[in-house]
Image 1 (tube, rainbow, N blue to C red):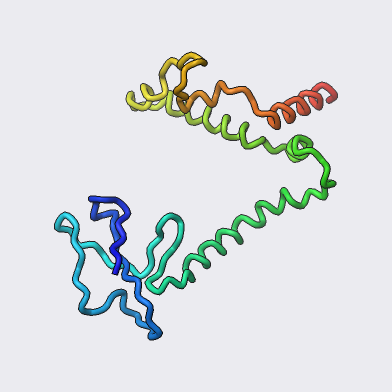
Image 2: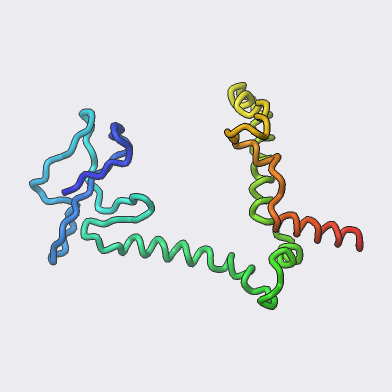
Length: 174
């Protein structure tokens, strides 16, 4: 019997699971004689399944629930990735050309745009604490600490620069 605690000291975020190898299939979560576990005078519920570090564990360690969840996620994302894989492009076509032709931003550009949107929204939020959290002077470039907002002033990576230059060339020829 192993109690699994997700957050030390918080009974609301805790659960217990009993790992037991048995050839008999039992619908019971725990044996009838098993005492209740308590933390800070709050009862810790017994679970039949528990997700820990991304792995769904069951009481017999069969991993059926985990495999079903991972399979479901894979089936969900496969058609979304298929669009990128079904370009019929030759294997030697540069990534920058694919990004330009499919009008897809690079991951760096996407994250930079998402960060800018986040900081713009937070900067105009009605809560003064939110506004104060994003309003700061960036440290000098030689400073060793990097604040999250520094991503907005970082130079683009090589792929993003190549895609931007290809888009600039296309814009001048249009």
